[in-house]
Length: 69
Image 1 (spheres, rainbow, N blue to C red):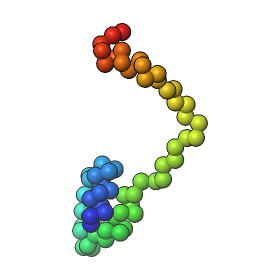
Image 2: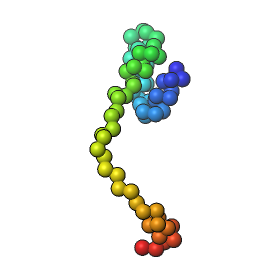
Image 3: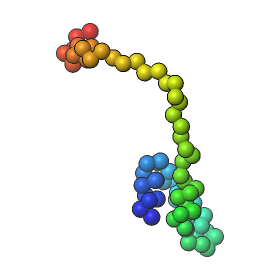
Image 4: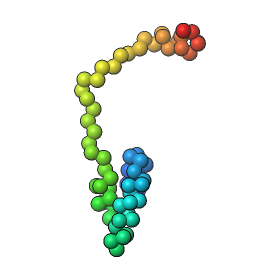
């Protein structure tokens, strides 16, 4: 159940978990943590390989901190 709490927190799926538990109880069954975790686990996310990132010169941050344009 601790794993479910972490998953619910990380994925913000508290309402979905509540519905799944209510459905199980409505059928007269006890909810199984492993089955619930499998239902709520997000699909694997893959990051794109070619995302361009523009690096900023650190000296420009000094201007921001000092309030200069």
